[in-house]
Image (cartoon, rainbow over all chains, first blue to last red; front, side, top):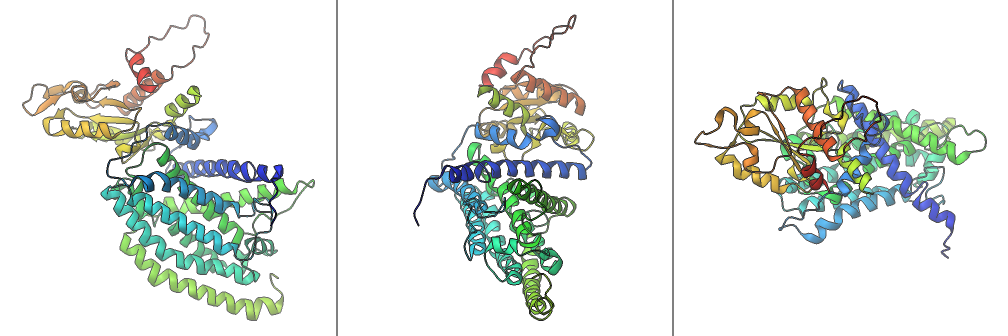
Length: 335
Length: 166
């Protein structure tokens, strides 16, 4: 493949829909979450930074970037320094494969199997977060990262199985093809898989009721306990990008991706608009669950995973395969 | 650039609550700040669990000999720039415990204090007022041209806090 330095490509990678767009979308989603959480708790949430507090996540980010960076003596310096940054970089890289404005950031249709690749990136990012806590020479950090590892090893399996459901209906492992073949969104064809996928994403993103790895009241800050300054900023940002990534995955696999009515021939604008609107719907659902449910214990989380969610995911896949083979395809539904 | 930095710091003060020997009166008032009625998240104030994440240390209670060393250690664990707010009469001066055999005295005997909020316990409104005064000392609001408006007296801590913020 000959590589040409195309200005349009550089623009797509650095500005839209690449790095800058993803960064600001992430900060915006963070603001939506904080406001929603505050409103559900009968508070008002951030108000002072920008109109309605919309700049609050940006203020937090800049403040953390400019704070003193402390490295405790016993930390494993190399891992401690670079794993937060690497985790963030990998999550943004995974986001670049998602067709946000109708095409992925590299403006190709992706390749067969990129669904598996981006799920793998999410796993690697989680593993880097585990390393970040492990290297920080703090008992709370160690317990937090052990819990991260325990949790994501379990919940990755149902996540992969459930992600196969839309892939099977579309008959492709290419995420752009899956999103593109949803003239009837897959949430209507396989609602059971959608519900299970949302639950699994909550667990994968370590949000309530599955937020045992960084449960503030028992573990101080979990794996973030020893982190200060820019490293903490990137750890927070990684978590927020993971939330956007998980929601984007739900949008692409179940809600028809960026497809929607296009006016005035501005296809990239409307595709992005529909994508962001659908993304916000998923973020709101996810945040609603986070706010209204209580935290489970670590043993309940694991029991729920291996005894309930994994068999349920397998059953969901079997049900989908049976329906697609004997009902949907013969009657031409959703094809 | 410096403006952006100061703006971000003023809009996002994360606090850590440390009880150096209080009777829990001031602590309850601090917790009340986070409730829907007062909701200090409006100002971007978040209660953080780890000293490594915090910008402002809220100390309540007279400092006992046992706690003095721990208070110093927690203060040292916080990254620069950092501020300490002494909340309640005991934290400001030792209060009724001044001269007690087990008490060092006010918080300023152990760590440098940026703002004092007296009261036994101070009302949540008083704490918000103190924190807002501390924040405006870091970033003084631009003088609005209003005829006849009384000139606000700068708080005595302003210079020291400004240096600390740089």
